[in-house]
Each structure stands twice: as C-alpha cells, then as structure tokens.
Length: 137
Image 1 (tube, helix red, strand yellow):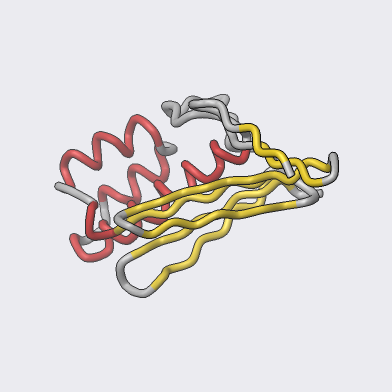
Image 2 (cartoon, helix red, strand yellow):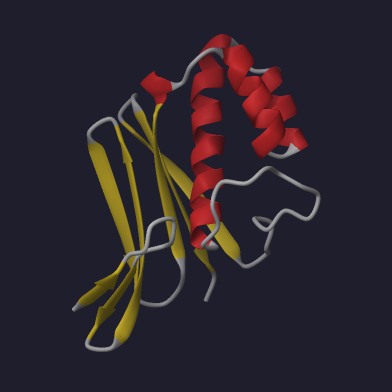
C-alpha cells in the first residue's frame, strides 16, 4: 500500500498498483473518509453548531453557491437557515473535492454542474451534515 498526499491536493491511495479514490473531511473532533474503487469521490462534513451569523453567511452563499440556492437561503427562517446552509455548503465542498478542485466562487460555467455527478447528503444527529459526491460510472 502506498499513499501519496501533497499539500492542497487530493490524497491518492494505491493498493497492489490499483488506485483507490480517497476523500477526507473533519469538523469539531469528528472525521470521515470515503474510498472508491470505481470513481472519483468527495466528502464534506459540516458542524451545524459552527455556522455563524446569518448575514455573513448570506454573503458567502452569494459568492460560492448558485444564485437560486442563495435566494432560497435568503428566504429561509432562522431555524431552517443553519441547516440549509450547512447542507448546501457540504454539497458544494464535496462536489469540488470530487473534481479535485479547491473551494472556488460560483460562476455560470461552474465545474460542479456535470450531469454525471451524483451528490447526496445526510444528517448525523442534529449537529452534523455529511455530503458525498461521486462521478457516475
């Protein structure tokens, strides 16, 4: 087994010469890792307790998330906002990780729009949201 991990790059794992796609995320003392033999994968874990002031995050949403998502967040009530922002942020980061990209601002030609990407999320208790993205094989 060989692990290649360069700062700022996606870790690469090789077992008996075969590449295994890896994605790792952590939040507030909790970590997760995803492995795939078949396709690139990305995961992101968000601690909902660390989501700060709504106004600041609306500005962040306008920069990094699609306009329709930012608008939807702006119309969320305070209780929904934290959860919805956490879900959308985790999905964004997981998608970018899947493509081997750092966090980037949203554009009309956003790389996270491929038809062959599957993005899913789940709640872990009431505190965490986990998203995973993978390319369809």
